[in-house]
Amino acid sequence: MRQLFFHLFPVIVFVLFGFRTVCSQEANEGSQSETTVQPSVQINDPCAQCHMRITPGIVVDWQLSKHSTNDVGCSSCHGDRHNSMTDPGNAGLAGPEVCAKCHGVQVEQFGKGKHALAWGAMKAMPTLHWQPVAQVEGLKGCGACHRVGLKTAGEVKDLIAKGSGFGVGSCDCCHTRHIFSVDEAKSPQACRTCHTGVESPEWEMYASSRHGVRFLLKQSRILPEDVAAPTCQSCHFPDGAHDNGTAWGGLGLRLPYPQDDQWASNRVTILQALGIFDPSGKPTPRLAAIETYKFMSFSEEDWKGEREKDLKSCNDCHSINFARAELDKGDQMIREADALMAEGIRIVAALYRDGLLKKPGNYSYDFPDLFSEHNAPTVIEQKLFTMFHDYRTKTFQGAFHCSPDYSFLRGWAPMQSSLVEIRERAAEIRAVAGKAAEHPAECPKR
Image (cartoon, rainbow, N blue to C red; front, side):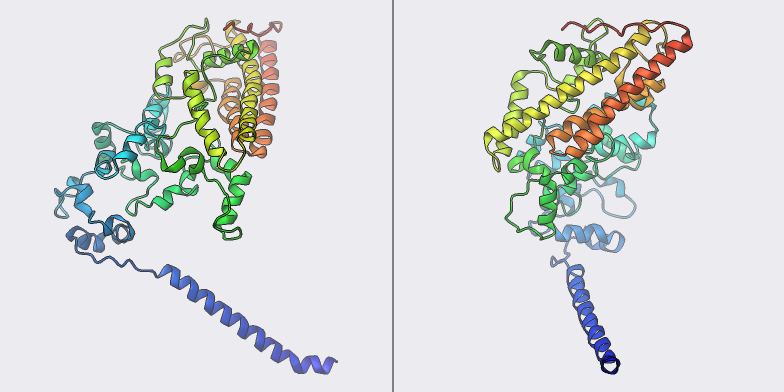
């Protein structure tokens, strides 16, 4: 038997090696056929002929676009004032007003959606001017994602002068230039650049949900092409509409107050900590910005309108009763999260009330300000900020995005842990100050 094996061994090695070589060749041929696809559009545009030598990637993208086969050339979007290597600054930026010449419906819809408000919403943040210029105007931080919002002509000119280009035109944030692909913008990966990470992990929530898992399996061709697998766009941009919105807004808050008195009281406390209401419950100037940039819903009609859009999208795959019940669960997670959040705020507010925390110069009131964000002046307020902007967001958004991991383990559970830390830290502050612990601030009346 051993002699037979030794006689056959060279043959076995030869067969296996030959099979591997053939498979490798086939794989390489397949990969070459995908990567060596050449654009079929001939370059007759003088701009493209020049840029093929200088920035060929731009031209190849344009050749692969629908624009190239529909007589939309460089000058159609950038104008004809840039004619040589000495005047590149004369090339106009293709903003929404340019896109509207052909895509008027989409641009009009975009102007009514949340994305259009992103730039203004960022600029409304009280501590924005504390951030590094490269993060904001250089679009390396907040500005990198908020640039999708509409801007004035002056703002666009200023951003370009500082070296910013991509995304400043808004539409090309999702339809990346110069291919401007509809298929790209319809893929959930297009959302990932901005809707990811600590404070807005919608991509991670989606990818870990059954919706996302099924889509990624479909994209990998493990599941059939026709299988139901909702994307971000299925729910937030149904039928290709560009006026995206959400019922609860980015803050997970809304008016009018709920019928539940305790929940209403908790919501007042959160609104006070956001500086939307002052400590006595009166509206502040910050309220106007919150309403203008749709950080939250301000009427029952608006909230129900967005909720009906959600139900309609869910109803494509689920019964309306199932969909309504699931969304109701998300609402209840907001209610539960608000109870924890309000308790934490009241503990810190009591420290201000009793003079154990000193009001910072940029604060309007002796009260915690959640919009101070990462610039919160004390350790206990940093914990409060993280509890709100990170864990509370994951708690309710994880529920709405069908991700138990984010709703519970990365949201609700850390909220509880944070509250324990806030209680203990407050007790330490009082002990150091030599004062007996007092009751937290009373629950406000709505």
